[in-house]
Amino acid sequence: MKKLTGIGFLLTLVITLTACQGTQTNAPPPASPASEGAPPLILTATVPLEGVKGRFDHFASGKGKVFVSGLGNNSVEVIDLFQGTRVHEITGVPNPQGVTFSPEANKLFVASEKGKVYIYDGDSYKLISSLDFEGGADNLRYDAANKRVYVGCGDDEKTSAIATIDATTNKRLDEVYKLGGEPESVPTRKVRSKHLCKPPGPEADCCHQPHHKGTHAMARDPGPEFSHGSG
Image 1: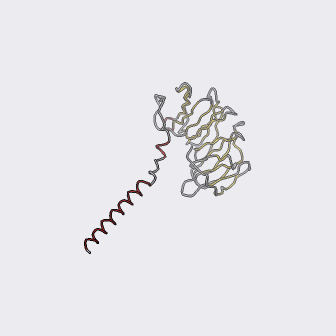
Image 2: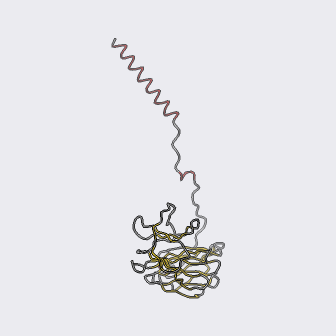
């Protein structure tokens, strides 16, 4: 009786092991990480920027050029994408941050931490005008459909806002959106015709509908599409 019990135990053990092996064999292989399927970024060239010191901040592009804010160098570096070289350097911009280009107006807009937005000709890079923004100017976003530049400006509850510039006249518009906190990012959502901001702090996304004159308080955005990765 003991022998039969022992044989029964061995058979059970063998069957169990066989079943486990069958399960492992038939189980689908683990999914490969997404990174394995996507081609890696490949370094094809580097552009030396001799004499440029400190860190970079924002980038923008237009007319085959890349515009780089040299925050620590008080300059904007202009790089030709086709030549792969620096073709111009705009100097004398105190702590440049946001930068954007208007193809329609052929102008380059540069925001300064020290409270100005500088406007340059898109060919000669000569200064056309400058506008004051209390508390500093940071993020810039261009709305091509309406030829407006949106400026994330201010550094406290009183001055923090999204202001607007008419890219054709170089004038500030009455359209101002108060935030109550310094905007960290101002991406544009074309689908819903809204412009979003990212004040500091968790769950602080907000939005506004454009084309409303005057000063407005910002409303929180219920949409899930918000992303503030630029800029």
